[in-house]
Image (tube, rainbow, N blue to C red; front, side):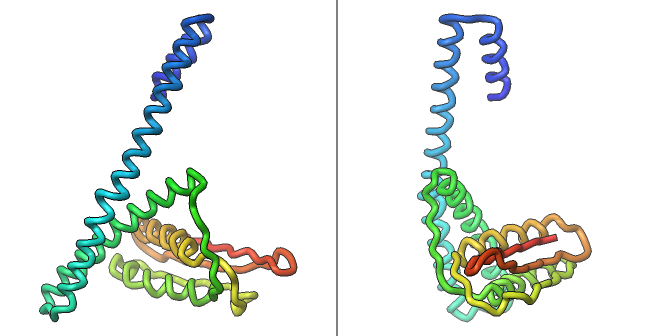
Length: 196
Protein backbone atom coordinates (compact mmCIF):
# COMPACT_ATOMS: atom_id res chain seq x y z
CA UNK A 1 0.00 0.00 0.00
CA UNK A 2 2.78 2.44 0.98
CA UNK A 3 4.69 1.75 -2.23
CA UNK A 4 1.52 2.27 -4.28
CA UNK A 5 0.83 5.61 -2.53
CA UNK A 6 4.41 6.75 -3.12
CA UNK A 7 4.10 5.77 -6.77
CA UNK A 8 0.81 7.65 -6.96
CA UNK A 9 2.29 10.82 -5.41
CA UNK A 10 5.28 10.68 -7.73
CA UNK A 11 3.05 10.23 -10.75
CA UNK A 12 0.78 13.09 -9.63
CA UNK A 13 3.74 15.42 -9.23
CA UNK A 14 5.16 14.43 -12.64
CA UNK A 15 1.86 14.37 -14.54
CA UNK A 16 -1.21 16.44 -14.51
CA UNK A 17 -4.61 16.24 -16.04
CA UNK A 18 -6.46 13.05 -16.89
CA UNK A 19 -3.77 10.60 -15.69
CA UNK A 20 -3.73 12.19 -12.25
CA UNK A 21 -7.50 12.04 -11.93
CA UNK A 22 -7.56 8.39 -13.03
CA UNK A 23 -4.87 7.51 -10.49
CA UNK A 24 -6.79 9.29 -7.75
CA UNK A 25 -9.92 7.35 -8.64
CA UNK A 26 -7.98 4.07 -8.57
CA UNK A 27 -6.44 4.95 -5.20
CA UNK A 28 -9.85 5.87 -3.77
CA UNK A 29 -11.36 2.61 -5.03
CA UNK A 30 -8.44 0.63 -3.60
CA UNK A 31 -8.86 2.27 -0.17
CA UNK A 32 -12.62 1.61 -0.19
CA UNK A 33 -12.00 -2.04 -1.12
CA UNK A 34 -9.55 -2.38 1.78
CA UNK A 35 -12.07 -0.93 4.21
CA UNK A 36 -14.79 -3.31 2.98
CA UNK A 37 -12.40 -6.27 3.33
CA UNK A 38 -11.52 -5.24 6.87
CA UNK A 39 -15.21 -4.86 7.76
CA UNK A 40 -15.93 -8.35 6.38
CA UNK A 41 -13.01 -9.81 8.35
CA UNK A 42 -14.26 -8.29 11.59
CA UNK A 43 -17.79 -9.57 10.96
CA UNK A 44 -16.36 -13.03 10.26
CA UNK A 45 -14.38 -12.96 13.48
CA UNK A 46 -17.44 -11.81 15.35
CA UNK A 47 -19.60 -14.67 14.17
CA UNK A 48 -17.37 -17.53 13.05
CA UNK A 49 -14.91 -17.50 15.95
CA UNK A 50 -16.82 -16.04 18.87
CA UNK A 51 -19.85 -18.35 18.79
CA UNK A 52 -17.92 -21.66 18.66
CA UNK A 53 -15.44 -20.39 21.24
CA UNK A 54 -18.26 -19.58 23.66
CA UNK A 55 -19.58 -23.08 23.10
CA UNK A 56 -16.16 -24.59 23.87
CA UNK A 57 -15.95 -22.60 27.10
CA UNK A 58 -19.43 -23.84 28.05
CA UNK A 59 -18.48 -27.48 27.46
CA UNK A 60 -15.28 -27.08 29.48
CA UNK A 61 -17.35 -25.68 32.35
CA UNK A 62 -19.66 -28.72 32.12
CA UNK A 63 -16.66 -31.07 32.24
CA UNK A 64 -15.27 -29.23 35.27
CA UNK A 65 -18.55 -29.92 37.11
CA UNK A 66 -18.14 -33.69 36.62
CA UNK A 67 -15.46 -33.93 39.35
CA UNK A 68 -12.41 -34.50 37.15
CA UNK A 69 -9.27 -35.93 38.71
CA UNK A 70 -6.28 -33.65 39.34
CA UNK A 71 -4.66 -34.22 35.95
CA UNK A 72 -7.92 -33.72 34.04
CA UNK A 73 -8.63 -30.56 36.05
CA UNK A 74 -5.17 -29.26 35.14
CA UNK A 75 -5.86 -29.78 31.42
CA UNK A 76 -9.37 -28.31 31.66
CA UNK A 77 -8.10 -25.27 33.57
CA UNK A 78 -5.47 -24.68 30.88
CA UNK A 79 -8.10 -25.05 28.17
CA UNK A 80 -10.34 -22.59 30.01
CA UNK A 81 -7.57 -20.04 30.37
CA UNK A 82 -6.53 -20.33 26.73
CA UNK A 83 -10.04 -20.17 25.33
CA UNK A 84 -10.98 -17.21 27.53
CA UNK A 85 -7.80 -15.44 26.42
CA UNK A 86 -8.70 -15.96 22.76
CA UNK A 87 -12.25 -14.76 23.44
CA UNK A 88 -10.82 -11.70 25.18
CA UNK A 89 -8.62 -10.94 22.14
CA UNK A 90 -11.60 -11.28 19.79
CA UNK A 91 -13.72 -9.04 22.04
CA UNK A 92 -10.92 -6.46 22.19
CA UNK A 93 -10.69 -6.46 18.40
CA UNK A 94 -14.44 -5.97 18.09
CA UNK A 95 -14.37 -3.20 20.73
CA UNK A 96 -11.58 -1.47 18.83
CA UNK A 97 -13.69 -1.67 15.67
CA UNK A 98 -16.72 -0.24 17.50
CA UNK A 99 -14.58 2.52 19.00
CA UNK A 100 -13.19 3.39 15.57
CA UNK A 101 -16.72 3.50 14.15
CA UNK A 102 -17.97 5.63 17.05
CA UNK A 103 -20.35 2.86 18.13
CA UNK A 104 -18.92 1.90 21.50
CA UNK A 105 -21.32 2.24 24.40
CA UNK A 106 -20.36 3.28 27.90
CA UNK A 107 -22.38 1.79 30.77
CA UNK A 108 -21.70 3.84 33.91
CA UNK A 109 -22.41 2.20 37.27
CA UNK A 110 -21.50 3.21 40.83
CA UNK A 111 -18.28 1.51 41.91
CA UNK A 112 -15.32 1.63 44.26
CA UNK A 113 -12.02 2.32 42.51
CA UNK A 114 -10.11 0.72 45.37
CA UNK A 115 -12.14 -2.51 45.16
CA UNK A 116 -11.79 -2.66 41.36
CA UNK A 117 -8.01 -2.13 41.47
CA UNK A 118 -7.61 -4.71 44.25
CA UNK A 119 -9.70 -7.29 42.34
CA UNK A 120 -7.56 -6.82 39.25
CA UNK A 121 -4.36 -7.04 41.32
CA UNK A 122 -5.51 -10.28 42.98
CA UNK A 123 -6.46 -11.83 39.64
CA UNK A 124 -3.05 -11.04 38.07
CA UNK A 125 -0.90 -11.98 41.05
CA UNK A 126 -0.85 -15.74 40.21
CA UNK A 127 0.13 -14.98 36.59
CA UNK A 128 3.02 -12.82 37.72
CA UNK A 129 4.16 -15.38 40.31
CA UNK A 130 4.01 -18.18 37.73
CA UNK A 131 6.44 -16.20 35.60
CA UNK A 132 8.71 -15.49 38.58
CA UNK A 133 7.72 -11.82 38.76
CA UNK A 134 6.67 -9.79 41.76
CA UNK A 135 3.42 -7.82 41.32
CA UNK A 136 3.34 -4.68 43.45
CA UNK A 137 0.22 -2.60 44.15
CA UNK A 138 0.67 1.11 44.89
CA UNK A 139 -2.63 2.87 45.63
CA UNK A 140 -2.55 6.55 46.60
CA UNK A 141 -5.09 7.20 49.40
CA UNK A 142 -6.77 10.55 48.65
CA UNK A 143 -10.31 10.11 47.31
CA UNK A 144 -10.05 6.28 47.09
CA UNK A 145 -12.79 5.82 49.70
CA UNK A 146 -15.44 7.54 47.55
CA UNK A 147 -17.92 5.86 45.22
CA UNK A 148 -17.63 6.86 41.57
CA UNK A 149 -19.75 6.52 38.45
CA UNK A 150 -18.00 4.85 35.52
CA UNK A 151 -17.88 1.89 33.15
CA UNK A 152 -16.11 -0.78 35.21
CA UNK A 153 -15.99 -3.19 32.27
CA UNK A 154 -14.04 -0.71 30.12
CA UNK A 155 -11.77 0.27 33.02
CA UNK A 156 -11.10 -3.39 33.80
CA UNK A 157 -10.43 -4.08 30.11
CA UNK A 158 -7.86 -1.29 29.82
CA UNK A 159 -6.09 -2.13 33.09
CA UNK A 160 -6.11 -5.86 32.27
CA UNK A 161 -4.52 -5.14 28.89
CA UNK A 162 -1.83 -2.98 30.48
CA UNK A 163 -1.04 -5.60 33.14
CA UNK A 164 -1.17 -8.48 30.68
CA UNK A 165 1.39 -6.78 28.44
CA UNK A 166 3.59 -5.84 31.39
CA UNK A 167 3.63 -9.43 32.70
CA UNK A 168 4.16 -10.84 29.21
CA UNK A 169 7.05 -8.54 28.29
CA UNK A 170 8.83 -8.23 31.66
CA UNK A 171 11.57 -10.87 31.80
CA UNK A 172 12.31 -10.53 35.53
CA UNK A 173 11.80 -8.28 38.53
CA UNK A 174 8.69 -6.35 39.51
CA UNK A 175 5.57 -5.12 37.74
CA UNK A 176 3.91 -2.24 39.59
CA UNK A 177 0.24 -1.28 39.33
CA UNK A 178 -0.26 2.31 40.53
CA UNK A 179 -3.58 4.06 40.97
CA UNK A 180 -4.28 7.61 42.10
CA UNK A 181 -7.29 9.91 41.97
CA UNK A 182 -7.09 13.66 41.68
CA UNK A 183 -9.91 16.15 42.05
CA UNK A 184 -10.49 18.28 38.96
CA UNK A 185 -13.61 20.28 39.87
CA UNK A 186 -16.45 20.20 42.37
CA UNK A 187 -17.73 16.72 41.41
CA UNK A 188 -15.18 15.69 38.80
CA UNK A 189 -12.26 13.40 39.52
CA UNK A 190 -9.56 11.87 37.36
CA UNK A 191 -8.28 8.33 37.76
CA UNK A 192 -4.62 7.86 36.86
CA UNK A 193 -3.55 4.23 36.42
CA UNK A 194 0.06 3.40 35.61
CA UNK A 195 1.64 0.01 35.00
CA UNK A 196 5.43 -0.13 35.05
